[in-house]
Length: 213
Image (cartoon, rainbow, N blue to C red):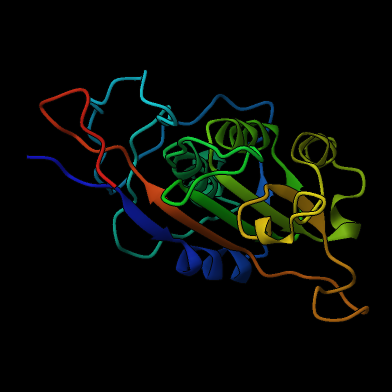
């Protein structure tokens, strides 16, 4: 018996992140990488790595409410961030069409954030795009202006909303873009954080060739 992949909507987690003023940030460089304790199912994938678009992890976040606490040490401060990173690394890609766009059924990642200072997450997002995931990221312009990880992510993903001459690729084209003002008008700045994922978590099966849709 196999367990199929899922859709992860981390809006609840991000509402918490917004309440605590958090954004997409890496763990402090002076601290050792924390051991992530997750109250969710993490089962080893038996899917062959030769399958196009296979993600490097098999993580499916369980239901519940999660909090990050910036003043309680490294592990507590990246509690939400680590869940986001693991979900990015568990999103399935797949084949692409003649325009190099992900096919229907491939995974999608959508993020809106205020700041972005996490190179590990940036590299995971680019790796997701490279395996056929549609990755679209929006961030505030002022908060990311001097962020090396954000500038690198923009160079890797590009900022075009669609393939030139093909506006039908708006939903599949990967990009990293900055808001004009608050994304709702020329004034202010966007401060909400939303992460939406589709096609997350590799199936676990007794055979290595089976990949459900």
